[in-house]
Every structure is written in C-alpha cells, then in structure tokens.
Image 1: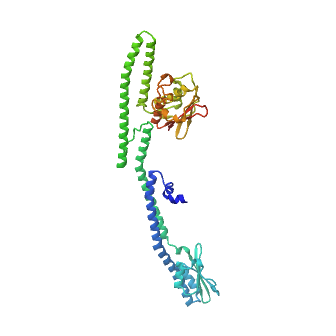
Image 2 (image 1 turned 90 degrees about the vertical axis):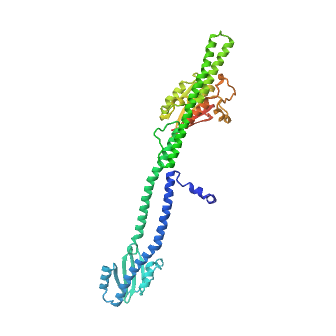
Image 3 (image 1 turned 180 degrees about the vertical axis):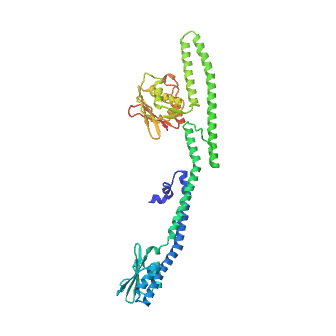
Length: 439
C-alpha cells in the first residue's frame, strides 16, 4: 500500500494502453465520460427531483380529491370508484369499519410522495410502494379508502431517455473518432514495418510517405536515411572491389615470378608467405564487404544448412545434423550461408565433432552449432567478436586464420535483425553458438 501511495502514477500506468491508437482514443474518451457524468449529475439534481415532486403532487392531489368528496358524500362510494378508475387512473376500494393501525414506513418517510400527501391530505394516511404498484390508504369516517396506482406514474422517462441519448451520441462519436484515428495511425504502423524490415535486411518497395504532415516528414527522413546508408554501402563495395583488384595484381605477379624461379627453401617460404597474404587479403575484404548488395529471397533453411555443412573447410570432422520441418525465411541466402559456414568451420577447427540443431519458436528461429573442443572462457565471449581478435594472440594462418570469422558471422546476423549468442555446451563440453533469426 505504501509503495502504491509513493508511486500512484506508476501503478496507473500499468493499466494504460500501450499503443498510440489506444492512448489517443483514451484521451478522447476520458473528457467525454467526465462531461457525461457531470451532465447526468446536473440533470438528475435539478430536473429529476423537480419532476418527481410534480408527479408525487399529482398522485397526492387525486387521492386528496377523492378523499374529500367521499367525506362530503360518503353514501355514494360507487360513484367515486368510477370517477377514480376512469378519469384519475386510480383503483379505489372501500374497507368499512376499519381504522389505520400503522403509520408510514420509515423507509418512505420524508420522500417526495410522503411530503405531497402530508401537504394535501388532512385525514390519517399511510402508503407502501411495491414492485409495480403504489398503495395509498386514507382513513375516513366509517372505514378506509384504499387507492392503487401504477408505480411508473412516479417515474419520469425523460431521465432514462436523456441517458440513452447521451450514451448513444457519445458511442457514435467514439466510433467515428476511432475510424479517423485508425487512419491517422496506419501510416505510422507502415513506417514501423518498413523500418523493421530494413533492420532485418529486407526491402519495402511499396512504402511511401503518407498521412499527416508530421508523419510524412518522419517517413521522408527514414527514406533519406535509408538511401544514404545504401549509397554508402554501394560506394564501400565498389571501393573494395577496386582495392581487391589493385592488391591482387601484384600478388599474382609475385606468384608467377616465384613459379619461374628455381625451387629452393627460400622460394618455398616466399610462396607460403604469398599464399598467406592472399588468404589474409581475402579475409579482410570479406569482412569489410559484409553482406554487400545481395537482395533477400525466400530460402529453404534446411537446404542452406546442408550446403554450409558440405562446404566446410574441415571435411574430416564429422558434423551431425538431422533436418526438421522449418519455415521458409526471407534472408540473404549467400550471406547467411557464409555466416553458418564460419560458425561450423570455427567449431570444426577446434573440435573433433560438431552438432548442428534447429529450434523454431513463434517469433524466431534458432540455429545451434556445438562442438566438443576446449571451448572459450566466459570472460572472452564478447572479445572474440572483435575484428582480428584471437585467443592465441597470433596471426598464423595455420592455427586458425586472422580472427575475422566470428566478426563476419555476427555482422551478417545483425544485418538480418538477429544475433549470435555464445555459451558453454552442457552436452558436449565445447562451445555453443546460437544464431537467432527473427521471422
């Protein structure tokens, strides 16, 4: 309770709608309900009480009239019954030789009807209000006069009609507002979908700015940002293609010159250095190139995993994988294949066996690669994703490349809106790499 009093707005916030549409509708509905409540209260306080008094006075006046006439001419009771039933909507009964032995019940004292009867009837009286009827009894000279009238005569229909009218018009107003609000929010939803697709490396060719001026500005800013990013990516790819060509040309000349030289221990060492430089250059360019300009396409993930396993660098290492039914995903197939191959190659490089499994969930597909190697210390999980980082601290190609495999793999995962999560394999003792891709 103390926590609620200290943070009342936080407690209320938990029950508020989360969407812009819901909050906008609440902003319209809250003052409308407040105005309705105030109007109903004012109407009830000023109008309902006056109407009830007037209706009670009418009933009391009719009862007083019949009672006074009976007191004046007591012998003609049938005449009064006829007048009361025909003209005054009162059913009248005469009970001879009786006296009133009880007063008005406490629950009905000082009500509008009691006050009206008290002011107009001078004979002793009592009354009770049943579910459908009001029964009023007055004492006359030689008995009792009992009057029965419908209870609805004491109730005004105007109050209920007022409530129905206000509620109906408010509901109609909210429905019309909801339609207009939905149309205003729709462009924002489309923008959110386009931004999410762009974050996952997918295109939204039919997206265009629409809606209000502010939403159009936001949409146009998103399109401008998207165009700048794509232009920068294109420029980077084209530049790297030129750099690749410029660097490969001298390496090719060096290979040719070494091939024409007599074979010796020196030339053999130089050839290994040139080959290592070529592989390092290819690794650098692959990392810098990233996903390139590849378009997304619907891809069979099982087939992609099998291709990555088949193309691994260490065919002598057994890779266990049992395909299961998986959804078709819109991905950049070649980039994702390269990501899987990097993870499988990394596992095969340090382990004797590799296990690949998939775990489809409602919101994402998880592909898990495990090995039985030495694993990675938990405090190094974040560092191994850094470009050129290696646990052995070397740059020897024979011991595992230049340290770009996991960096490239995670960049590709990020370009699909996913991620790679490292942990220790409980089943096999090595490293467990989980590639998570949202649908």
